[in-house]
Length: 171
Image (cartoon, rainbow, N blue to C red; front, top):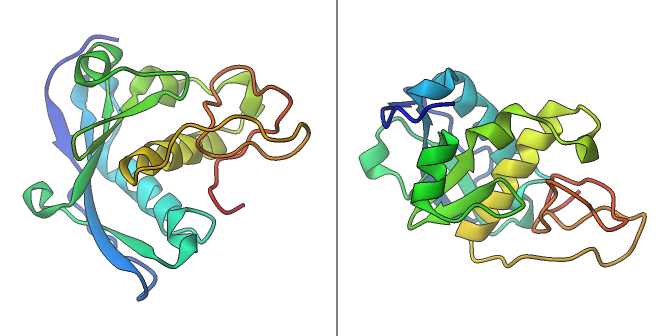
């Protein structure tokens, strides 16, 4: 996949579903060469971040998607591999942060690993939650106990060291 360096920003707004916790606004961008639709990705991201199993489940934070990227606290960007690797080092999670941006490698977004048994929606939820976790200051984790859900901050692109795939901070 080639890097175009051009981005489309989601033009829709999805408010936070909760009224408790710190309000964080975000925008969603996709590199045009990925052939993904910014509004479709934006709806999916909003669904994940508004899910009570996501970071909002702590009650200390809530997320709202806004169309005006300049007013957002942070952005979530799906970028071609070349663009993503220039922004930051992508580890075994398919995500990284670059300042106030969560960067998701489009190659990771488009190919669901064996650990997720073909469940693309759950894999996308993991990529979003793992990346936002880094932005919130969470650190990488390891498998604490075999046959239990992996911590969302554990890289889940490859071997899960006996843990079960898990896309949620609060499963």
